[in-house]
Image (cartoon, rainbow, N blue to C red; front, side, top):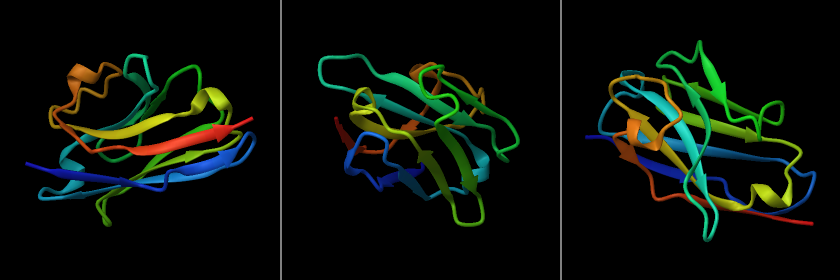
Length: 124
């Protein structure tokens, strides 16, 4: 069992940056591939980014490629999502998720553990 807690969300203007953090407890983070997803009101959960167990491989949704960066610090048991050049369409509840099979995928069904989410709101 692993517990995930996201933080770092907030209300920003278009073009601003935010860094989300996801702190894990209960298991060592390097046991898991990690992902970030988001869900806007009335929309389905959407893949944002994923990173392999040691962070050597990363994978992004086309909508955030070049603007967002996923990283991890396994010594701190924390995963990050650096978000630059934010747009109003990035507004959503952002979740981090852990995949114990390390399939490193974009489908939310791949992931076994989820945080409660942190809200990101981007005004125009």
